[in-house]
Length: 69
Image 1 (spheres, rainbow, N blue to C red):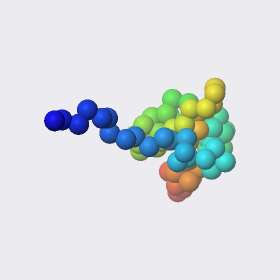
Image 2 (image 1 turned 90 degrees about the vertical axis):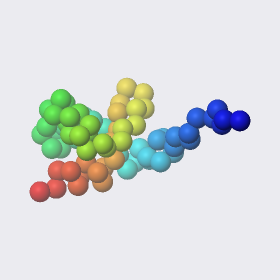
Image 3 (image 1 turned 60 degrees about the horizontal axis):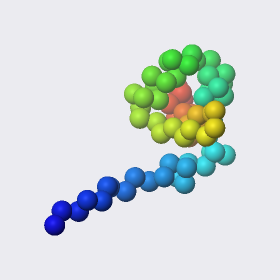
């Protein structure tokens, strides 16, 4: 009999703590990058996003490593 259960997807809100994240506006100001360019980088580097209310959060460590030059 086949297993009809869906694979378990981890709850991103339990993995990412908001205290350890930037919201998109913070990243745009800190690194002087446009919204479109930022979303393209997030997509290209597969950075996880957390939507909370009207804000979208991304992990500080991953963003800082991305812009570290």
